[in-house]
Length: 314
Image (tube, rainbow, N blue to C red; front, top):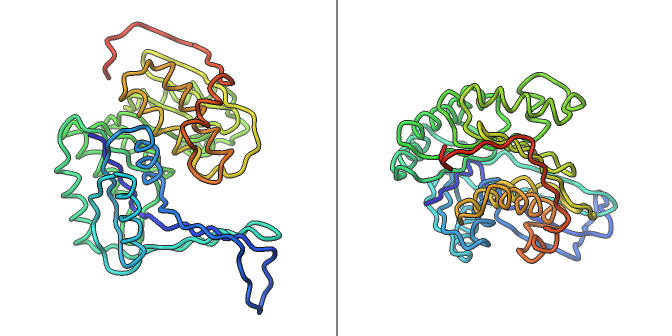
C-alpha cells in the first residue's frame, strides 16, 4: 500500500483577469479550485496510473473538507487529522503579469501532531510513504527526522521530497528514495547551482548514498534527471515544449517513477516515463494526462552511466 503525507495542504485558486487594478472591483473571466500540496499531487498522479493510495495530512474548516471531498472523487483514500482553523487557500492570478499569494495555514497543536504521528506508526510494514512539502506552523523540522526513524524501525519505504536541511539528518535512517531538485542539492552542500554539472551531481548523489539514502533522484527541469543507486547511475533527458507551469512537474516525475516501479516496469522504463510526466506537467496548467505523457516518451533519451547486476531489492 502507498501512503502520502502532505503536512500543509492547500486549495490553489487560479483566476484569470484582463488586468489587476488597485482600489476597484476586479472581475475574473476564469477561475479554478484545485486541492494542492506536493504529496497530494503524488496521490493524484498515482490515482491516474490506477494505483490505490491513501492521502494523509492536516486539514481544517470548509477548505479542508473540500480537499478531502475532491480526493475521494478521484478514488483516493484519505486519513486526515482535523485541526482548528482553516486549511490555507493560495491565490494565483494571471493578469498583465502573474501574481502569487501564498498563505501560512493553520497552527498545529502538540496533540494534533501526536495524532498524526500515531497514524504513521500504524502504517503496515513494507508499505511506501511519500513525505513531501513544507511543514505547517507549530511543527519543527525535527518532525521529519522522527518520521524517518519510525519508518526505519517499522520497515516502511520512506520517500522524501523536502527542501529542509533536516533531510541530511534523516539519511542515517536509510530512506528508500530522496528527490532533491538542483537548487535543493546545491543548498545541502552549500554550492551554487552553476557548479552542478552532471558529474558533480553524480558525485554528490553518491555522497548522499554513502550517508544512508538507498536511491537518489535529482530532478533538473528542462535538463531531465539523474538517478543514482548503489547499482545504477542513469541520466535521462526531458522533452521540448512550451512551459506553462513548473510547480507540479517534480511531483509528477516522482510519483510516476515510483508508480511504474510498483507496476513492475523496468528501472529504465520507469525513469523515461517519469521524465515524460514531468515535462508534460510543465507544459500543462496542472497535472498532466496519461495521453500527454505517452506523446512525449519518444522524445526522452536515456544514458546508462553505471549498471551492475543485483537482485532488484534495496
